[in-house]
Figure 1 (cartoon, rainbow over the protein chains, first blue to last red):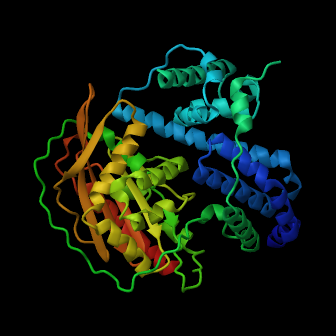
Figure 2: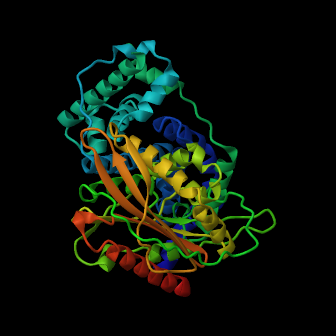
Figure 3: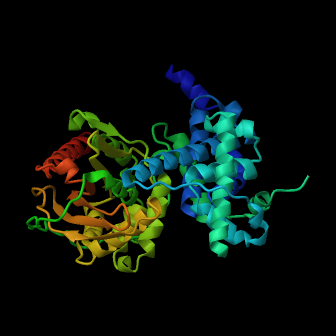
Length: 178
Length: 310
């Protein structure tokens, strides 16, 4: 058994792994950095976790899966896991302290008038679930159906979540402008 | 088809990685490939901030305080702040390097830390693990800590906070809304651990910690206006090589105003520091130290066992 595992491990040489890393690192990092709005420490954490999965894949004999699409899928799941845990934590925290955050109806027309850097700052302040769906929608360019699959919600719930995320951002923009 | 303005915002984002991170991760991953039992997710890149290790080991500081009749309005529902602030609640391996010493091989420390963290089974019935505590909280807390003017002199205490956490996490939630958060940090040497304890033990550190705590609470609970100060609380029994503790009383204003009490304790055991944050007044318990004592004793026993076998 161990011999077989070792054989798998040998399927990707250090040089080949290093080449894969060199080829893919920048794109993975840039994607994750953008998805967490420039939080360097977090982007590094997620990048590290993503490539740790590559190592695991190599060890498990799944070296054939080491493609860019696969790697970006791993990165996205790391991101989703992160937002999920953040969201779960914040829900619990909000319950603990009572007085949850309400959602108001609003639109996103104001966005074009705002400095992009300011938009990024406002995005950072959104709840994790809102950030996540906006990232998946506008950074990953996924459809609502695809987002629903990724986050494990119904399409209807995802549409609703996406709408609330836009509204939350719009509200933040409005508050900033006022 | 017009482009959504948010797409434009995302497309314009271009964050560049630090070369040191890129190369460090590369080297670590290649090492992981060669070392089958340890992966980079189990270790802490970027956790090796250069620290000049102190020349002396500080001895036990005895804390002796009595508890006052601090007001309490309700049970420890607000322990959530502990989870944000001590977002750590995690096993952290810190490989401090001095400019005169070679990097320390701490590959076994993560396994030690994992083994030393308390599990719910060890606290008896009614406890539930909260997993995982989100790594972002680590990052946010690091930033918050650094942003507090009161913390400028206590950067050593934040060294563990600079370590990116990816490991085992223990935040233990009791069905009665009590929470015990545990953070276990293993340093490369006892001197390095003592250096961190020096910062934590400094007279001004509580103010730094309170400020960070409140800043974190404001993020976690928009609309509240927390204000934390110290309060007297009976210290735990003496444990480990050195121990620091203080009580925290967090007042929140507004319609949901309340008072919440916390007890934060740091215990150095050789080259490890165990940090515990507990809610001492869950549901009006008259035995506030019970869970804390049990947790500390359990954690130290686990740590000693893991150290001896690790």
